[in-house]
Length: 109
Image 1 (spheres, rainbow, N blue to C red):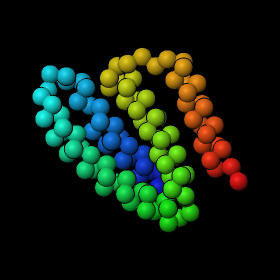
Image 2 (tube, rainbow, N blue to C red):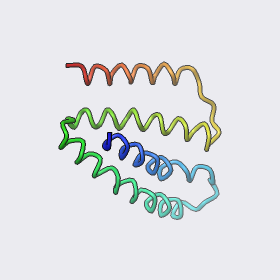
Image 3 (cartoon, helix red, strand yellow):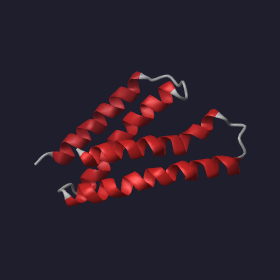
């Protein structure tokens, strides 16, 4: 559970680092880059331990990556809807369901 919590927290920082600057398209590119890298430092400080702990506790690298992607989609979806005010379409739900099916296959013994 510690791995999942760290991955979730790191993804919140990652999503803000990669996409928050889109709210202010008038910001100079260099400022957006500096802001993004400043936020991304915290993402790395959480992501690296999450992967080390997860790998050491029995997750494979493939499983860690798949978990990461699912968490990323959840965090990004909430960010896009609530921060960027973008519409959420039914086809996104279908896409997510297919990705969850991939996760199920990944963890199936």
